[in-house]
Structures are given as structure tokens and as C-alpha cells.
Length: 341
Image (spheres, rainbow, N blue to C red):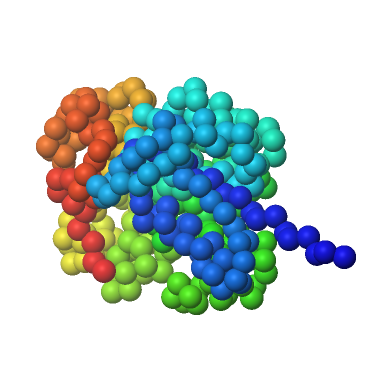
């Protein structure tokens, strides 16, 4: 009796202009390694875009893609949307219709980086846990309140997989291989790619052991900053923070001056403005709503502080701060937060 060859597991990655190339390749490479190490085609993949052809990544390199119309009728086991800056610019009827069709067919739907926004806009993350890159977490929470937004590196929630991007995409792929083929092949693929450890589900994007000031800062200073980060919309006063920490304001001022090179009130204002900037440039929220969501009760105070920090008004930044966002980092430009690492 002839043994039937198992059917290969089919993956489709849909990219948008200015997608993150490293995250996309990092996601696909473990499947290539698994095929090589097993000596068989366990996994197959295609890369597509809405119209097909050459698509430029955020680093300026380009890849050739198939058009959605070429792959829409093919069997898929997992469909992954890989996007980066301004994902809202790439929502379209052809994109949403294709994603919804695959979801109705029972295909596992996933996203890398800001691809979660496209899945959410297509209605495919309603009632699900999901994640995205930490720069965009606040925007995802504000725009899609029906999604349980997590700050984990990656989230597997039934037929939905989301990943923050970066080298976490490799961990994400290895977890998929592990679930399909077991520990032995997943470990072999990880070793082949020099991935020295596989980060488990539930791993935070910003673990407290390294963020935000590293190991040189006193624990009480880290707790102060954590309180600030947890209370951006309903901002605490500095005396309230001191009371919770059982610390005098003079002691807190001294710690911030020594380790952060800023006063507590200025540091707190800056992280609220950093949140505001992500909402200004990544959502269409009214600027008055952005001000409130960032802890500013006065629109004029918010606008003055924003201009002082970033060199332009929120309204101008909403226009000028869109894609391609080349060479921007967090905070996106202008005066950066001073941190000790």
C-alpha cells in the first residue's frame, strides 16, 4: 500500500507598503529552516499585496509580491498581515473582503507589527486578545475597544495570532512549528537560526527587569515611573506619587535629577506628550480627545506643551507626521526622554 504524502502547511503573508522587512523575514525563516532540517516540504508560503508587484519595505528594500486576486482561491492554513507605519492607509474593500473570506473558511488569521489594525478594521479581532508594536498600543486600545489589547510579544487566541514584530516574529513562528511538528523540530530550527532561547507565551514587550531605566536605578525610582506610566489620562500630582511611595518630594526630585536628568514633573509631562503624539499621528481622534486622553485638561496648554516638545503643533504634526516616517524613533523626533541603560 502506498503511503500518502502529508499535505504541506500553507502560509500566506500579505504585506503593505513600508512594511517591516526584518519582522516579515524573521517570521518566514523558521519555516524554511524546518523544511531544510526535515528534508521535506512541511511548510509552503506566498507573499502577496493588494495589487501585487514590487512593494517597498520601511528600510527601502523591495520584494516581489503576488496580487490578492492570484491567491484568493488557493487553500491557506494561516494568513498573516504584515504592516508598519500608518496601517489605516491600507484598509480597502479588496483587502477586507479577502481577509473576511478566509476567516469565514476557518483559516487562522494573524498579524505582524501594525497588521493588527487592519485585522481589527476588518472586524476580525472583535472579542479577541491581540497585540501590536508598543508604539501603537495606545492607538489600538483607543480605536478598537472591542479588542482586548495585550502588551505581550505575541498572542495566540484561538484562530487569531498577533505579534508585535521585530525579532519576536521568529519566536512566534517557532511556536507555530512547535504546535505543528513538536519540540524536536522547533528546537532544531531555533538552533539552526541561532535563536538561543524561545520566549514563552505571556512574555511582555517591556519587562520590568530592563525598562525603563535598567539595573542602575533605585527600585523606588522605577516604581515612581511605573506609577506615572499607569496614570497618563488621569494624571497624578507629584505629591500624590510621593505619598504612595512614602517618599518626600525632595528625595524624589533628587533621584530624578541624578538618574533621569529631569525633574519629576517634566518627565511625567514628556511621557504624556509621547502618548499624545502616538494618538495624533496614528489615529483620527479629535485633538481635544487626544488632550484629555493624555492628561491635559486645557487644549491650549496641551498645544503649547506639544509644540515646545516636538517643534510643531498637534494639527501640523497630524499632517506632516504620517508615513513614510523614515528614520523616526521613539520619541519620534525632537527632544528625547533621558534614560539610563
